[in-house]
Image 1 (cartoon, rainbow, N blue to C red):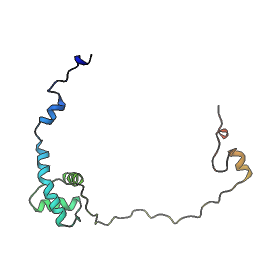
Image 2 (image 1 turned 90 degrees about the vertical axis):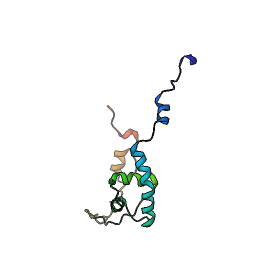
Image 3 (image 1 turned 90 degrees about the horizontal axis):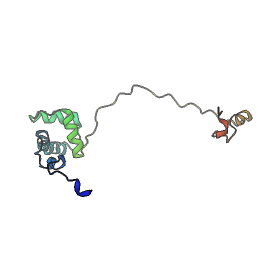
Image 4 (image 1 turned 120 degrees about the vertical axis):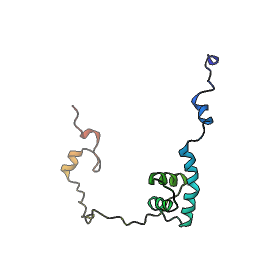
Length: 124
């Protein structure tokens, strides 16, 4: 039975290895050293937005999503220098409600005082 199944040499697994790299991949490999150079030159301060602008100043038109992807692929991350605006302010902590061990609560739970037992749930 094993001899009946043959792998064709032109399967997609082998064709992928022989296929030339795409134009996008070739351009990404050209941009990677430039991104690393800028990242090193600015002491790892630039985030994706600023790195995209720096590449634009050097005459390269790179989309921000491409710069973000390549920075991620290179393992680089810039500092986030923009101040974040807080839209909500948390309320001050309220005093916690004291835990009561009243007899009525114990009758309702029919179990431990912290967690109900399986008997306390009504079954049809």
